[in-house]
Image (cartoon, rainbow, N blue to C red; front, top):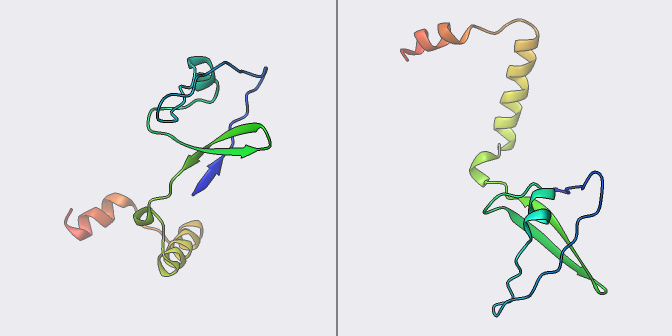
Length: 98
């Protein structure tokens, strides 16, 4: 998982929330907006002493990550492109019949 800590720029935003029957906590709109959250975002909640902190988390999809061999091919292709050895995308599509 990749972590992204949200920092609130100007002032600290805090509100009072109630814990529900199933240990659910409602995040107030002001905190939700300040953290730039969206529905279905993941939060890492950490308790230390009497304090609780939240960090947004992004889950990396295994299908979206490159294997070592694929990563090597991408680096090689980028090196070729920087050296001016690339072909225009329209030409590649034409050659592939796309």
